[in-house]
Length: 442
Image (tube, rainbow, N blue to C red; front, side):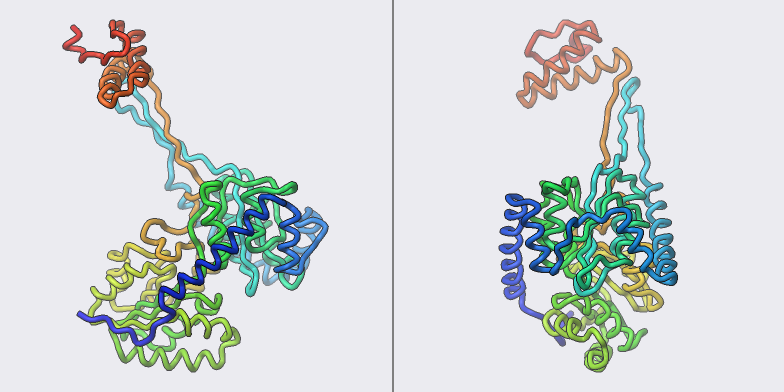
């Protein structure tokens, strides 16, 4: 077995240096927001977005005026996409049920799925206004029942983007801010004089947004580390170079640091795809960003077998994995580390990004090894409870609890159990000692 790289991207050492620079900038920025609040937010907005309104929070009249700027066609398309996303999110929500079971006579255990009480949804909008990100975060939070949904997106060309605001509003946002980047996620998580902090941050973003979420994690919850877009195409000779190249560049255009990987067992397909990428870059309007990503982060990997392709794919754990082979379902059954799968040549990552119904906020930087993407369940906290309804059950469980606490040396814990054995079981348990087994006590 052999793995051959026909093209490689930046070495890991250079990528790590880039990450270190981002970390330092984000750390100092978040400290500034915490110490100076609104003043820091305003300065950052002026610096990065050239935007200094009287208020970053849109009023209801502002929202209504912006909705009037969205064409009928665009509004209908937004509503169609949201209908698909809502339908799938509602099906996911219905799969999560509260439970209560009687595990012993008189002992009831259960759990409840409770929405996070406030969520900050970040919607990117720098080079490209990511209207779809509003559906994915705001609408999904609404389906989960989150009572306070805060949404924020940067201005586009010095003003709120009408379609983004429409998607936020239709999705169910309660507060809409026109703020981008670190200042948006920092303001929503830390809070300022005019922004009440949230309990959780969600949404994709550039390297600075992803790092800000990482540094804020713990202070608030986050959905996942959703950094620069990643894509992988797993293909064999059942498809051609045009499909492969198109799907690679379709995601590489996100930014200058979006990894795009072709994984194949066909050297012929690999070489033809390299040539097709060169051809398409010459005519692609977004070639400036796509070519930078492909130059620095593009890879073409040729494997000997499907098993080898599977092993490499699981190791890379890419955010988007487009599978176009003669055994797509085999990859579905055997892949375990990825963001989302796109099976067969008839679908593609752009469908998932914009309209098909699955969520497009997905794990990057190998996070697919331990988490899936954003979904309605991310906005729900599963909390357990217990209830004992009979004296006999209180004494029985208390007896075992007493001994197990003493086994670990927790006398105070044991007394919590002992007092129930005495009170509800009518047994004389000496203070600070383990309750005897019922048969021995008798």
